[in-house]
Length: 246
Image 1 (cartoon, rainbow, N blue to C red):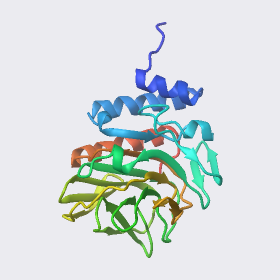
Image 2 (spheres, rainbow, N blue to C red):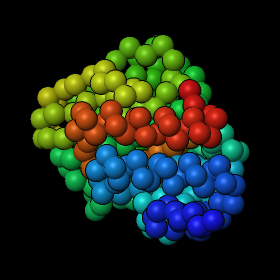
Image 3 (cartoon, rainbow, N blue to C red):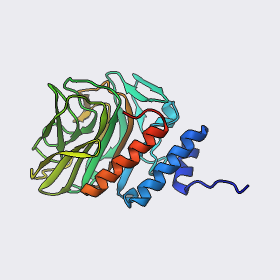
C-alpha cells in the first residue's frame, strides 16, 4: 500500500507540535487543504488550531511554526477540547503595528463556553484597537482598528467569532459564518503592542480576561464575505472531526 502523504505545511505543524494521534493529524491536514482550496491560506499571519492537549502543542502557530507561537502566562488549563484561561492570557508575539495592515485585518476566536459578562477573548487596544466579542447583557462588541464599535444581539457565546476589516470604511462582525453587523466606521490606528488571547492587551496590561475555552484562533488579513463563510465551513468541519464542535 502506498504511504499516505500529508500537505507539507500540515506536516511541519504536526512535527513541531508533536501530534501523534491519527485523528488529530488527519484533522490538521484536512484543515490546511481546505484553507488552501478556498484560496485563503495566504491571508493568515497566525493560526492556532489548539490541538494536542498540551500547552506545548497548543502554543504552535500552524501557519509558520516557530514564529508567533503563543507564550502562556500561568493559569491556563489544556485538554483535547481546547485551552481554558482563568484570569490569564497568552501572548501571540504578533505586534499589531508591525505585522498587520490597517485597512485589511481579521481576528477570530472559537469559544466553547457561554459567558455573558464584560470580557474580551483576544486583541489589543481598548478605545481604538482590535478586539473581539466583548459580550455583556446579551450583546457582543468588536473593534477593528477603529473607535467605532460593532455590536449585535448575542444570547449564547458558544460559537466561532470573526472580527473583520476590508477597507478604511468597512468592517464587519461574524458569528458561525453569518455576518451580523457591518459598519462604515473609519479606521484610525494600529496598536504598537502584541495581540493577546484570553484577554485584551491594554497598553501592555492584560485586561478584561475571559474564562471562555478556546478551540481555535487566528490573525491575518481582511476576508471577503465569501472568504469568511468558507473559513467557518473549514473550521467547523475541523472541530467536528475532533468531536468538540459547538
